[in-house]
Image (cartoon, rainbow, N blue to C red; front, side):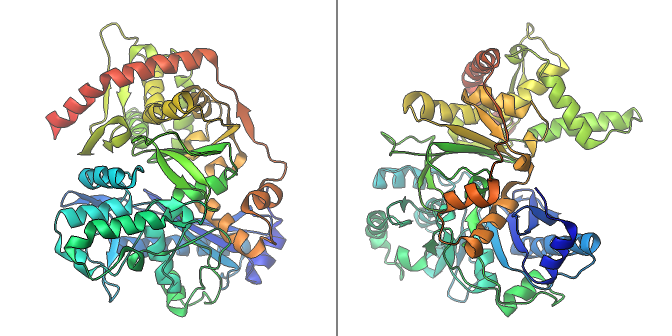
Length: 536
């Protein structure tokens, strides 16, 4: 993959390059792509969520400062690589972490601090809505946050005139359009896949349920409009261009694709929008998505139903925790290297520790690790805060390889709990499972561990580390280059072509070892809960 440098320069100068920006949990990343849909420039900005009055949040200042800094970094990269100013774009796509709650009054003012997907404060609303709809409504969904605010009698609810997700909020400010890609919309409120729109019956049920409160709004009036991939979602306004680029160099007027969630961009980036395909996106959180051939037999609290960017139904297992604790352990060894005056490259440190983990025992030598920085509903841990924990018995084989292997297993531990239901109880068939995210960059480690956890072949492409910013850039490219094709056909033909990636089959010993670790993991959950309670 990759455009010739001279051709890329001409494309940028002619305003044909396409920009995707994704707001991840720890990084805002921008990717500029060329005619062959491969990256030609990028920029990023690191940021962190914070707990404010018991709520995981980011301020709106964080959002805009971060967006501008990310874009400025991309502009610098373009200048350094091609010696040109970025003044015009062919299309833009905005994506972000799904779910959460951003509520605005009629003046467009934020009513309460942004409540992110990471919060586990809506248990009552989640249970009541799941019962009302006969459809699993997870705690992090926007409708659960809204209904919990109603149950809590929060005074702001009467003033809500619009609520949306982070991608919808940024897109609205850039274009003036209150819209959302159907994939992201499916994390706000249940979607009817036959219409790729909010489920009409459930919208009516919700309005009837809250009728006694006499709010001056109906649900449909305050939700964004749901759009499919390829639909027109507005154009960059003069105000929007200045929000993105305060220098005034960026011209207004380019089209934007529907804003999407990180689940939808992950599906695009891994070519997993067709039925019987799936992907696992691993970062601060981890989730698997499997595109279904038929509806599930019953409602499972561990399984969420969302959609592809085209509106097809997807079974999702979403876990709040993945790489944070792994990163913390690597940082400890980095500190140790500094203490010993050893100059260690961080990337090489990750690679060596990960590869060494694969020399450990298949069941991690009896070690047990939980990576819970925050609550983990799939594992039944509803607490807001977590308590990462490593434990063992006196008989455990406590080695560096087993310690790192246990932490790598733990990164996919809760994911396995949910997918065992999908594969073993619902007998859902998956022809191809794609892995993406930085954890897959070290060859032969996370890919093999995931294959063992899911007991299914896992494919990783060269673009596995590109992630969601590239995925939303692809959806923006599809908007202007689709030429009548479905998203599935366009991805197959124009993006991935003959790129099959590298596939590994599950190793039977590793599958057995992970199953033993998973059994220990299930049995140990009360100990993890006790640790959280004791340290709270």
